[in-house]
Amino acid sequence: MTAGPDWRALNRANWDERVAVHLKAPGYDLAPLRAGHGKLNPIEEAELGEVAGLEVLHLQCHFGADTLSLAQRGARVTGLDFSEPAIAAARALAGELRLADQARFVCADLYDAPAAIGRPGAFDLVYVTWGATCWLPDIRRWAAIVAQFLKPGGRLYYADHHPTAFVFDDGTKLPDGRPGYFVPYFHREAVVLTESTDYADPQAHLANATSVSWMHSLSDIVSGLIDAGLSLDRLHEHAHVPWRMFQLLVEREDGDWYWPDKPWLPLALSLQATKR
Image 1 (cartoon, rainbow, N blue to C red):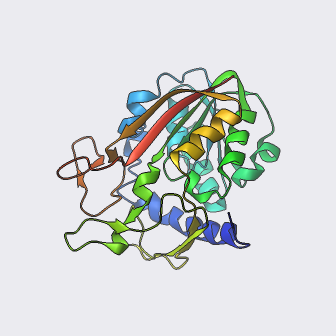
Image 2: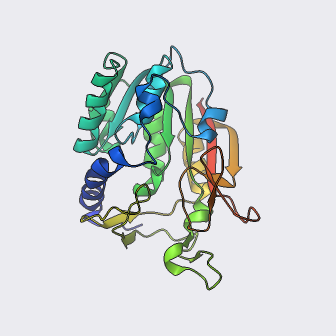
Image 3: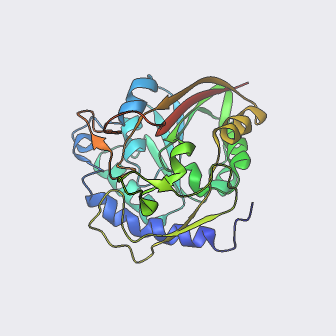
């Protein structure tokens, strides 16, 4: 696959700008976190289990809301993200919540994580969720990095949009309002998209609007993890997702977004894998 020389710089500028937007966006409600009981999304809440006493590595942690939620539950957490504004916000929030002793934040690119964090084989849990791996050109290298950080018997928890949903987009909307075809499922080249709106705040206008992403099939993700030395414990597909992926989706009481009529295809996936 072709990564392109500027993909990292484009994505970093895009996500640097999103930090200020997301800190104020309704989709990132920090009130429960500030009240001492941060919430994860419904899928993780149902599946993750207890984390108290665990050493957790949260890769691509954004500004650390979920990282700090895990710390509030008794985990010792290291969060990593490539955006300096995101990490600055995460550290400030950790200080505000008096969690700086339980949550450490590192600013580095995902592929530089082994050098930036060190501590190979030190973590009980690697946590990766929502809008993470689509920004990475090499999914097998990601899987190898996950495996490198885990203790033997340690586990990965991963939840993200389902790759079949990435095939479709509202930008190619059909006459009946359903999303149309966007990128083929087996497309492996970089997908360059210029979009000034933000998923968490549709009123926001991004100046750094160009981003670069990649399609990774379900088999690419699972095979990458198995080849890296992990055993797949469970794989779930979900007909709902934590953000309004398509305009026709409807929000339900749990805060997730669902198909309005029939569950036409999976919108999200989650899995757990254990290091052999």
